[in-house]
Image 1 (tube, one colour):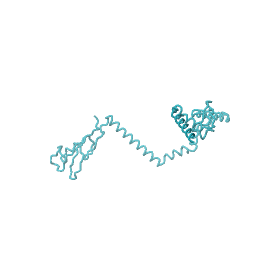
Image 2 (tube, helix red, strand yellow):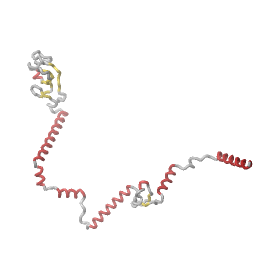
Image 3 (tube, one colour):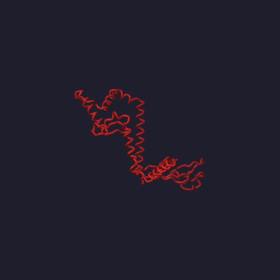
Image 4 (tube, helix red, strand yellow):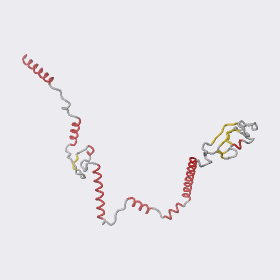
Length: 234
């Protein structure tokens, strides 16, 4: 009994020493991620054999994006697929031309749509009559007015930029309604309303007699400043 236990202890010590003396595994010996990925792809591909592209005649293998339609795939890339479609379209055109005798060609879609629209549209006299109705006439007049107003605004802006409009930016006097480039802001009546008056009206005795603080003839006069036209043409 003691001899067998001694033999077991000797064998275990020999195994431990051998394990300690064995060199550690290097990174090169371990499987790489690329190798694992290729093995996984190969396992997923299974028995799917490579195919030959019908356009470029080059072999291509199974891909993940073709998992559900691998049996119908016949080209290796989008470029070859586009070329295959164009070739099929040319073959169909040649076939239709051959079957139809080659004398007449099928009109394009745009011309067919135009012909269908011409067939569905009413005669020109009816169309002219509709345009001449009162409602349509009112719509056309409103459009013409809007266009004219836009053109006028554009012309005014252009004149202001170029400095050719002498009346650009002027304001009217509250008393004589004359458009000027300089107005005096003042109060001239018991209501205390601020008014913009031109120089000619400001010189009247009923306003201020041309004196900034007033000459006393108008007890309600009060000076409030000047307004100048900054858009005046130089």
